[in-house]
Image (cartoon, rainbow over all chains, first blue to last red; front, side):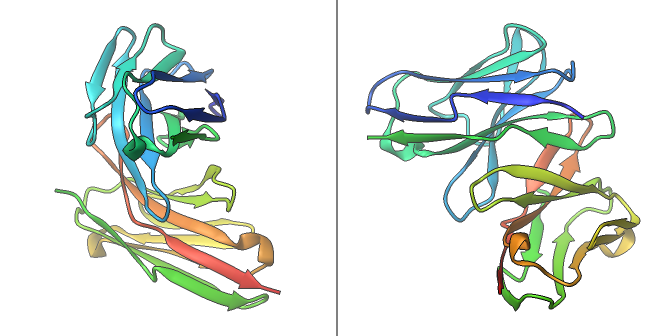
Length: 111
Length: 109
């Protein structure tokens, strides 16, 4: 089973500030994903990566950048945080059986 | 595009009652998963079930691919089953998931 670790678990950021969310996986899988979840809603894909040093846009990439410096690490970057980016963010990676495993989430509050 | 629809949107049970959650999707080429989200936010995978029936504990998932539907049955519900249940559809080869909006379950003692 993949181990997906996110940090920080929660963060309060000021509007216009820079935020970096980190994700580490130990499953050595090619694919990693960043999702956001808004209260009362399902998850939406922001960015994903299928190989180190490369990232792809998901369904809602505006306002976010991603970085995949290594197989194990995938970061989500908010260069200029906005109030609308207050949400819970999940990192995920597939397991060997095509299941997808998630980190515990990062609760981001932009004030 | 691909769509995943879940019903009911919310459900309230008394402890001990059974629940049946439904998921309908728009493609016959399915790799469907069920997830449970704890009230505190943590997501866990319940089933990867592209077809047929799978069991774990009090949970049973049945996917009928050619009818484009999957169900999650919870028997003898417990208060700790409270939370939100999502179904999600894998698309393509990259395990990208298309999510339903979830079923919010509350089990009262």
